[in-house]
Length: 114
Length: 112
Image (tube, rainbow over all chains, first blue to last red; front, side):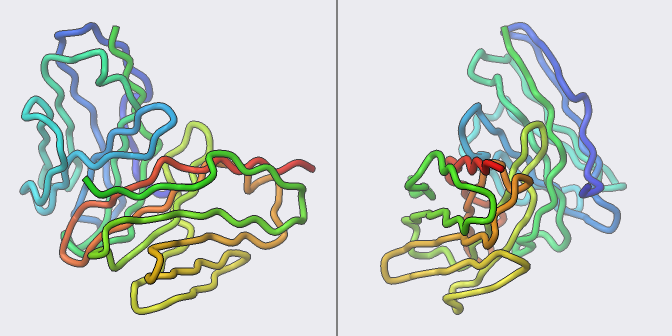
């Protein structure tokens, strides 16, 4: 186990709704990255937070937003859900911000949008 | 955009065989590569990494080979065990960047 936890495990939402996913990073890690993994695909980078600031963003629209708290836990918020947002959402924690390559992944939150 | 890809979507082997999983990358600026193992219902698990100034790195039962000339990466698993059954992803990144670019994955199936 990596020590990275995510909640909830599974979630079902309706198109147009909003969702918040949560991640607790491994002890001692100050960086959290979020990924979206569609079925049968590799994870796609959404964004990263380092010391409470966004530290890089992938090719995702602004309705994907995030937060990092002083204890380095993080939230991923998705507004105006679309069917294509159905995926496994992974968070990964690491230390040191940019250049901190070894990322420890949580088990993910499975989001289904109907 | 540039991305990491894998040649074989599924690899079936017998227990005790050696397995080789291949990966092609297209971003010549990438200088760090990682192999992850993902079991059903779990997040990706770090296996082994390699920097672009190396062409081979060995771990416990695993070896990663990097050929920068043809932009090819491989993961070799010795004496494959049923517990090795999972999806394997290669990922690449560039020094100073925060993002990992993953390929689609190869499913490794190990028969007893």
